[in-house]
Length: 349
Image (tube, rainbow, N blue to C red; front, side):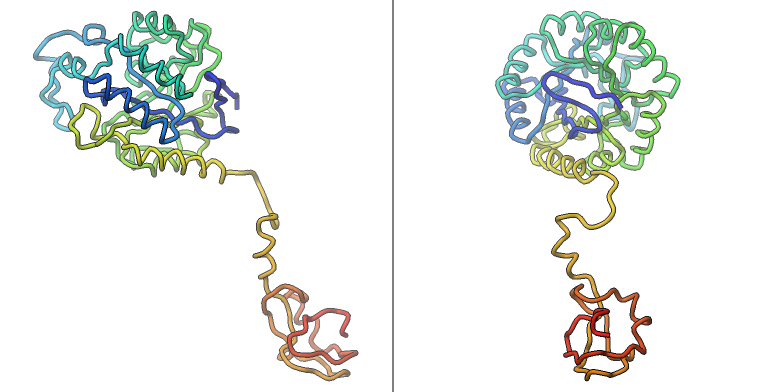
């Protein structure tokens, strides 16, 4: 599987997972809060911050009814218009520079999701190290082509997409010049249910598209994200908030700082645990290996005695012959006396 480099970070199955905190709307309209989120992300061990670059006018129309009113009973945002939702949620473009500079100061990467071509032009002016295309825009082939033409690494989220839609997007990106492409397995519901994660799809995506695959996760907690490591994900992205109960647009399905720190720690352990194919004792198992059972004499026995089964037992530690040899030893004569607790060896017969 290809290794991809974003900024100073190598990404792929042979490297620890790249942990990304999506700020999205969790700044709650405050640049100060956004910068504080960057600080807590750094303290939690997060590797990169991701923003979303759009304005209400570049993403929808200011219409109060019909198709532009959210009426879905399952939506967190039922009753809002799309325009009002995005007006509340968007990150002002003049905030990008201070946020990116804060990330650089702390040694973190920062990039964004553009939602239209003007956002790509704006982000190119900031020299972002890579781009992400969100799940809804996977069918926006012109946007994908615009991003791919920058020749920068492209992270493409696949929530809700059919295999043929993913193929169309992948082909469009490659034909437009993208050489470093990563797909994200994603469940496009907020919050998402663990049973809808279908993590086995990750392995199939790797085989089908021959690119690294990560996870964009909207479930509550870290279980799904940590489990995804076993399937070879190279990126884990989750939303970051100070408090899920603060009423922010995305807060209800976001991770709090302490949870994010646990994610960074446990995902690294999970990746380290993958290791390689290994049989036989490891150096670290040397002490415990000595606790394997072996055959010992369990009573004092005189020289010349014909040994019976009851003279021996399978006991710890492993200084004697293996227990599988016990039947071969029954009926053999001792050439010298042995004491109780002597390991059984061929030399005593």
